[in-house]
Image (cartoon, rainbow, N blue to C red; front, side, top):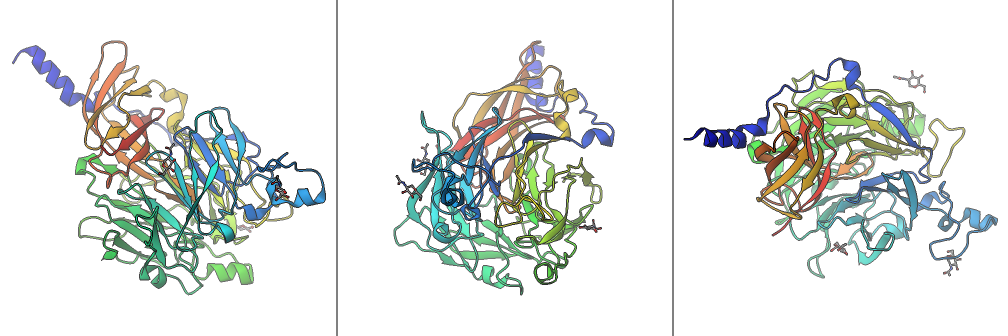
Length: 557
Ligand SMILES: *[C@@H]1O[C@H](CO)[C@@H](O)[C@H](O)[C@H]1NC(C)=O
Ligand SMILES: *[C@@H]1O[C@H](CO)[C@@H](O)[C@H](O)[C@H]1NC(C)=O
Ligand SMILES: *[C@@H]1O[C@H](CO)[C@@H](O)[C@H](O)[C@H]1NC(C)=O
């Protein structure tokens, strides 16, 4: 073999790992991150949020709050909103949804025709947000938001389709087949259904598990945690119990052990859950879920009837849901926590942000805001996984949310433990300030390590195929260079529906000379079970320092 050939092989095969040492993040202070105040008011409480592939964030509240802080000059039907008492009281003279543009840092109002209060949502394969359910007239509605619509300004479209059952506090998950979603549960609804339906007579399916897992305090196992396993089955967690459901056969194929400890995890107990990153190294076969925090048993009566706010849960459980050995591995957060959000950062760590230490979800049911985010590092030794990050001064209680952005920041918005917008004489006023939490990896001193200018040629990318990503790196790559794909979730009530991260296989990586351009050949996920088709954020992470992400689309052939 000529030395040239040896060189090429060396470049192609070893280079996926790089050479130099990783970034030395250094002292703890350097890992704590920063906070930015972006807007004094979004006008509308961000009870629900989702990042679109156009890098805008859709936010919406309940129309039932009537007067938001975003007053309209004209109603969406064109008629003027005057200063008459009638108009000042008229819900249609206020926005209840906005689109936040990240680059311009501005919001614009969106039109909602029915109440999406405590609803759910998922992105379809073309990046359209499918939004399901709500309250009253809105409880059976299906709405769409197309992030891109030519010369028009995009807005909500209320479709003529109806759900079979009312879905208030239901969860949804995008599915691998037929570009449709499953909607599970809701208040006093013990069924699931698909949207869109495949046939006219397709109805909802009874799910006894949703009935069995209600706690004694009422119909309270709401907003169940859903995760799509890489075998195509649906994991459903409600309060303390969980199952694996085969949706094609309407059959429960696994009943997992109960999570240890007292208390419960779903609304109004409102712990949170995330799927740990799926990894090409096991062909995405190992699927592990994590559930953290929640409320003590009896927290809702204590808060409502006695105005006592019981301490929340500190415990977190992790369980592999594939294979045959299922056991919750328990760990403890630094403090009790509920109503928090759990987001997977590009580094594969889990950010736990927002929420409170005492009480439960619902109006004015919680106290002692959790002002410090936690970073959970899944790869570290048990007992060493949590880091306490820099605290904010702004409480984010019930009806707040958090969203990972393409630039690596986390948008933090909303909070309103009241049925109206109330700014005075309450423990926790309506919160409209918009913040970003800026994780440590964004610090300028890592800019040398930071890959930039990602270019992906293929669009869309078919399953199992190779695709190339070009990027710039001013120095030799670190020992560990990772390529990750992140499905943007729909976040509400402490659960980020459809959130998913994949560590993609790098087949080769070469440096194109002295100018710093790199070319990596990556392998797309093998199937829509592993990654349902749609838009994902692709990020190159060099020694723990992520690039700005680029949108890619995984699609059927
Ligand atoms: C617009 O909506 C308002 C309030 O619902 C209603 O009073 C008015 O008649 C409507 N105007 C038009 C042009 O439809
Ligand atoms: C995306 O798909 C949905 C559902 O099929 C459809 O209603 C919508 O018009 C599509 N959007 C675009 C931009 O093609
Ligand atoms: C919770 O907040 C109350 C005041 O609202 C305070 O008295 C109490 O010490 C706080 N408890 C904890 C554990 O922070």
